[in-house]
Amino acid sequence: MINAHGFAMMQVLITILVLSFGLIGLVTLQANSYRNTHSAYLRSIATLQAYDIADRIRSNQNGVTAGVYDSITGIPSDPGCISLNCSISQLAQYDARQWNTDNGRLLPSGQGTVTRSGNTFLIRVMWDDERRGVSGTNCSNSASDLKCFSVVVQS
Image 1 (cartoon, rainbow, N blue to C red):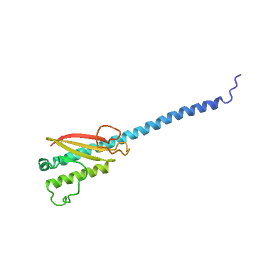
Image 2: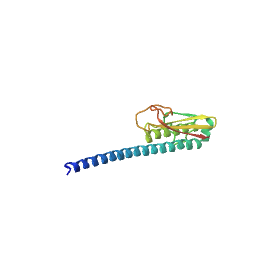
Image 3: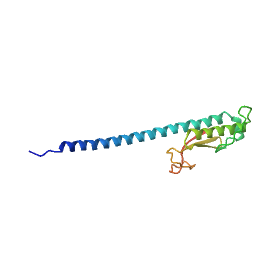
Image 4: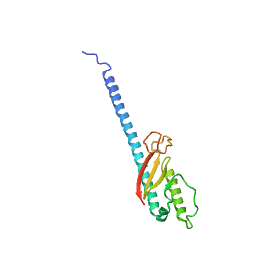
């Protein structure tokens, strides 16, 4: 007869060990899923923001002709005319202010730029996807740069 004292205890310990590894894998999978879902959510906000400024540009064709949308960066001052009658350049200034204010409010470290080349506009929305405190302004996929969504639209 074989001495089997403690054999059942060893089976329980091995079962707990295998179950623990499985649960650790499940928790890791869940954390990755949450991170990827949140990243997709931020990208969809960036997409909406890019098309928001494109619509603002299209709705002010006189401003496009005057070149007031040719270069947008940062948050300009409030022209204070929106309840009155804005000029085309004041409306463009208001659009840029509202758009980049919304970028900063809706996206972590959110900001946007618009540059014109001929009759096309390059719209770029940038944000800190990993919330690492990065402050770059390029779209190089470097760890020090913000995540970017770019779209080209015609005027």
